[in-house]
Image 1 (cartoon, rainbow, N blue to C red):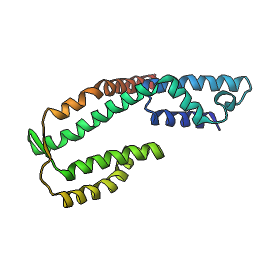
Image 2: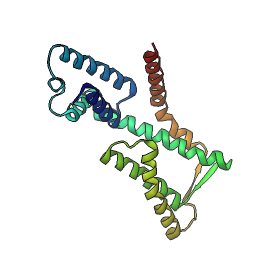
Image 3: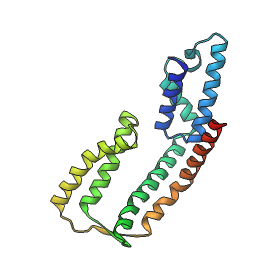
Image 4: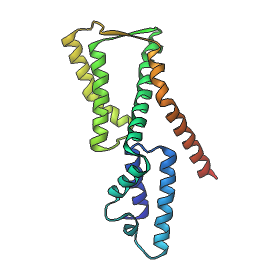
Length: 189
């Protein structure tokens, strides 16, 4: 494998594992420096990363961001996206309460489950493709449950629920946006 392929494989693995952008950039810079030093010393990239790049990347990710911290970050970002998705019907319907029916609930649960399962099993397809695959499964599930269970509301969700879901992920979203901005500024310099 070339150095660029190793860096790309590590980046993909770290994105999959939920390493934040700032840490990932720092890890990639450090790995790139080690690979260049090894090349200058006449060693191969395999001497640096070992026989399996994925195992190397996974071990470094576990050391850099332990599982409890990654789970907390993933749950917070999940709540953040759920808050934005829930906020859309309030804004499009100009209402302060949202009736949640069995079909709507099953649609969103299946969409989330398929998205997470696909990413865990196959890796990231990108947001649009991943949601496209999930929509192909979630839409029929929502229609079927709506047809079987009816369209009576299960519960009513008040307007304050989506902003409450946004709060846990807000620090991560701001931190990631700052890291991307700083990385773009560093690349431009």
